[in-house]
Image (cartoon, rainbow, N blue to C red; front, side):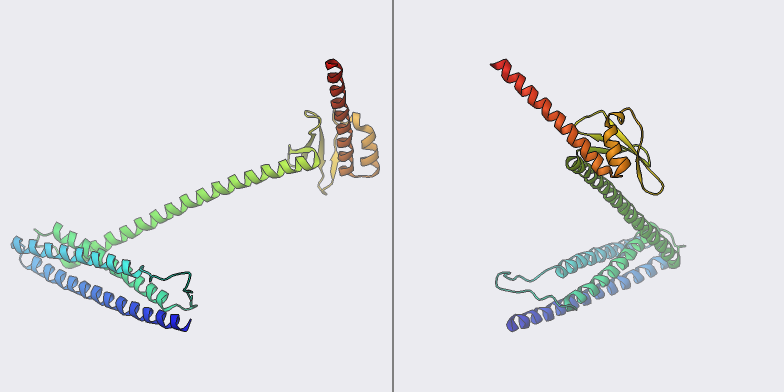
Length: 285
């Protein structure tokens, strides 16, 4: 383990040196691009008639910007590279304060800064190309227009990010609704299988209870403000008057009432099935 830690520390040091070297190269390229742009702006303001020299400067700026973009991409690719190791023989240690992660975050921030500066130079280059034949434009005006364009791009990016978040949230909301509907359906099915009754909410405080052994006939229960349930009169309740008297009026127990109804209907359906089987057997005989 100690040997692996020493090897890991050496890899960290190598990574830090490589990252520092790449960052120094990027900074040097940025400074060169800035110097080239400054000389280009001064030359264009002093002599607008020298179109050949301006063309050469524009091409040089374009080459510098392209080279800087490539450097940034190489830098990002190197940041994401990981060392090879055998997971069967090597145990990876995750430090609470990992210097590689810290360096990665710092230089990631630096890369983002360089990308913004690169975008500014690109926009300035476009402005120089657009105003190359005019000698009345000032560098301050170009800088102002570039800043306005950068603000517009920033607002566009923020708007696109918000739109993506809205679409993602809508999908998550729809998925949550589907899951909730599926769970509610499974819950109702489970209650029906366990109790033998289908319960439906007809109103805020009105519930319809229908036995699976006698579809099309149901009891109506109303929930009071105190939370109690009361059986309402209907065309179906008179045939269960004895059970109503025993389990509801005397014992005040709705589960016992519904269980008695279930047993009564189950016994009746069982007798019907036995009679049907006897009739079939007699016919075959």
